[in-house]
Image (cartoon, rainbow, N blue to C red; front, top):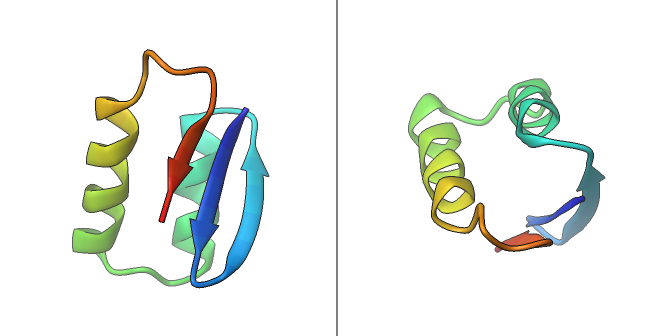
Length: 52
């Protein structure tokens, strides 16, 4: 599972696709989506990915 802390909200996602879709639904800009994707890619070797 991926744990994401976004503006104080904590969400659990099954995979990166769900993270991307959830961020899209929250109307994040493309640059923000890319920043989150970069953080995810840098932490792929972990069991739990935490985004702040």
